[in-house]
Image 1 (cartoon, helix red, strand yellow):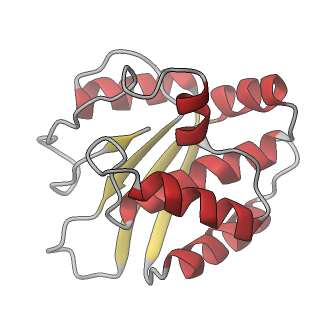
Image 2 (cartoon, helix red, strand yellow):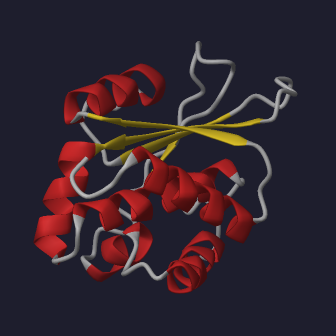
Length: 162
């Protein structure tokens, strides 16, 4: 990913977890639109690419794993160019969004709690406008809502997407 080293991303994920008050490991996958499409189809029965998917760990794991976050590098680069900020910063925005889902937030079902928390954390972490706010401003808020489907694989997790 241009402008974002693995070490810098690991530092950001640590800061974001502390800000969300989470303890445990987050596995982060930066991959292609095709892979996000495949994951979205497999776990959510939604055959299209997306920018970020979160897979909270099964409570029974007990191994300190919070879950997995998958991010499309292609979509991150495209959105960063469109919105006028670095691709590395867009990956951080997506990682934060995914981490909030791992913490139990669900903007598809809550009453704005995740949007408020994301805005607060973005400010604290020095990030620009995030996913929920973008969708609300573009009028895509409710039309973008999708109900997660319980997967039949992947440690009994429920993926959550933006």
